[in-house]
Amino acid sequence: MQLSSFRGYHIRMMKKTLLCAVLAAALAQPVASYADLPDLGEVSDASLSLADEARIGRNALLAMREAGDVLDDPEVNGYLNAIGGKLAAAANVPGVHFTYFCVADTGINAFAMPGGYVGINIGLLLATQSEGELASVLGHETAHVAQRHIARMKAASSATSPLLLLGTIVAAALAARAGSGDGAMGAVSAGMGLSISNQLAFSRDFEREADRVGMQYMAAAGFDVRNMAGFFQRLEQAGRYSDTMAYAFLRTHPVTLERISEAENRALDYPVKMRADSTDYLLVREKLRVMTMSPDEALRYYQSTQARGLYLSQGASWYGMARARLLRHDAAGAREALAKARGLLPDNPMLYGLEIEIAREGRDWNEARAIARKGRAAFPYSAALQLAEIDIALDGGDKAAAQKLLRAAEDARKNDPALSRRQARLYADADPLRYHAALGDAFYYEQRYPSALEQYQLAANAKGDDFYLRSSIEARIRELQRTVKDEKQQARN
Image 1 (tube, rainbow, N blue to C red):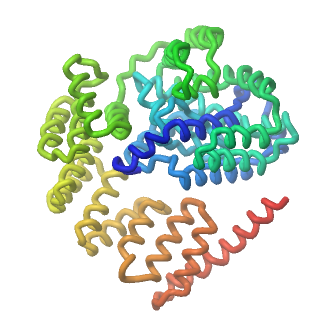
Image 2 (image 1 turned 45 degrees about the vertical axis):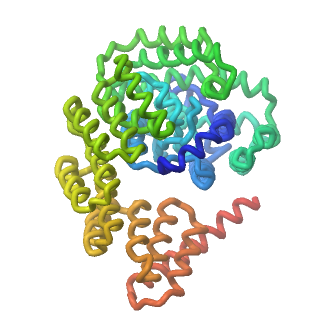
Image 3 (image 1 turned 30 degrees about the horizontal axis):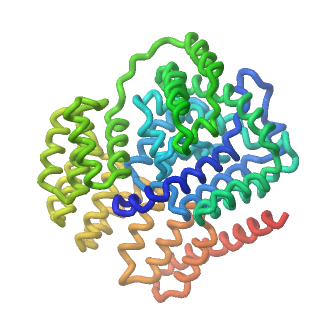
């Protein structure tokens, strides 16, 4: 999501927060830890297979993307998957690939969906005061997925079918998008077929289990588990004075003093770990903060907090100031603030990313490309810088350079929809065959199979004499025709 479009989204904050609350209420029902339960496989698989969970989660995420609720930012989502990946590695769940993503919503909430999809609102990330606090939420949500809470919820209620679960999510998304809060809540009531009292009792019982398992993942990933109780306690105290959706997290993850006390007592079994916040955490936090503000609001915020010394990191505060200046199209002021940030922070790919944005503001493609090359030399594995360098070549009209960069990137990162979309841009005006094939690849890697099939069929009908590309397109069409047919059949059953 671009900065210019976020303001319109911010105005609709209450509607979008409702969607995230609905998703969490419908889906975030955890179960007990591996240490306290027998093998969950038979019960879970009998009620909802891993394939069912993957399909439900995938389709729910696609619905959110279509509604514009997912923040498409490689730096932010790259960071979330880096820290989430450490927790997922500790969970070690066979057959589940975890995907962590940022939700473009200023409400304080987080949720886990079937198939390993974990969403974190902008508002929640900004509410954290340390990377450990963020890890505590990610660990908690990862535990929901690892313990296969949706399958066990379905096992406890035979009326809740996989398609009803998906239907509930999609119906709620459409109702919230249309601005009907009553419609969204009605979708939940009709779709779940569970009484509110029973659902809340189940949630309160098993949230504690997610806390316990999440703590295990936090400890294994190198975080101090005490951050969990501390963050929950701070939210609970703030929630006492708020009756708005700003504290949706407390509604979907009920926090009681008893639960906080249990978490504090449980944390005594773990050693204290003094862990400094990563530079990535500090910079991502400020990048997201600026996204939620108007240019004038952002500038006033950083002027005020710097004057009073109210920041987690002075260097990160100057990074935020640089972004605030850039939001006002003040390239000189942004460069000055970024230089101060560089003087206070370790070298980081996000600093190069912002420097590139400043150069692009003045449409200085040569400078932007030089910065990208320098950044990639320092951080060769940065996907965000790699994409930025390709974008510079495309925007600057250097198609030969863009093609060379894309080929190198595709050798290192197979099946990446972001690269396929840039490949489509490369061929958009000159080669319909390759344009539609690349766009089909992007949809295919995103598992948007009907859209992928449509693009491959357009490619098959386009002019072009690349025999090998046409052969691969025809094979992909046959595969997708079977896949789409099977999914339609499953939907009818």
